[in-house]
Image (cartoon, rainbow, N blue to C red; front, side, top):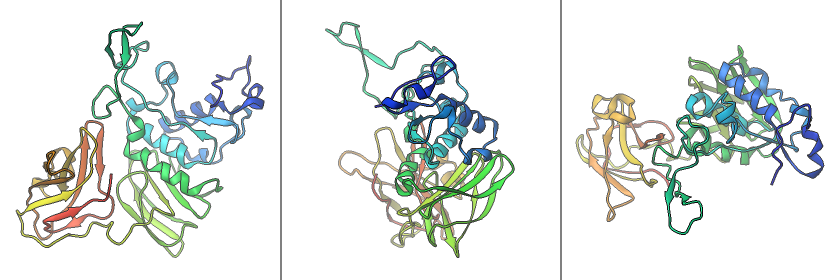
Length: 339
């Protein structure tokens, strides 16, 4: 429970801190505008916005009001918005709130998707949320955001140490010895090499596809445009997470994959050849399932000896890539963890 206080010259945030945590709109304005403009490097040294200490502040990139009336950065802005949300979860300042909303299609007074029901005094009730449809945005399920919850849990209250900066739009930092995060709010890839206190090992990226290796106290990786790299203890790449080839098969064999999905998701084989979409999930080779075979998905797929590929869960709100290194070559069976 916390207090929603707008915070201005009439009512300061600090008037409410004796009674609990307080929403920090000054944080929202600083972080949202910084990521919108690609000016983020200075955000590692977070001030006590509005006089609120980290323990007192509830922070957010947008909320139910600002996405309508002060839309500096919202889901409409795509990758840059989700990058800002991932940064909020990686940074130690404040107690973060992740937005999960519906599409109000430009009508700021529009309520959530609703359905008529007899006996309801208002005549309408809110429909069950369905993240597979366009009406519900479900920002919290975006790939860049959802894995950052585990990152934040892993680093706890560890302090922040800046490790790399490239101009104003790229910055990387450690969270104690438990986490390393890099953010690239620019239109080009960032070839990053930086020291880290994270233990040596291979780690899955908590804020997107791929892995990175820490060796001799140093991490070298490419951080994609408008993307992030987030590594943490407990997120080490296990022996099979690189996506081994599975059982040997022949090109064109039926591929069976064990993959758990949400309603509205489909499974595609996406890879380096035109038959597999040339790394475009929408053009990949689809697998299929039914009530009697789920969670096994299967289909006829051409996988040559040198073909690189991955499994991808695809839904209207984006693509969820299989973690780890690319698979290479034919396979007849594959298991992709648990959902």
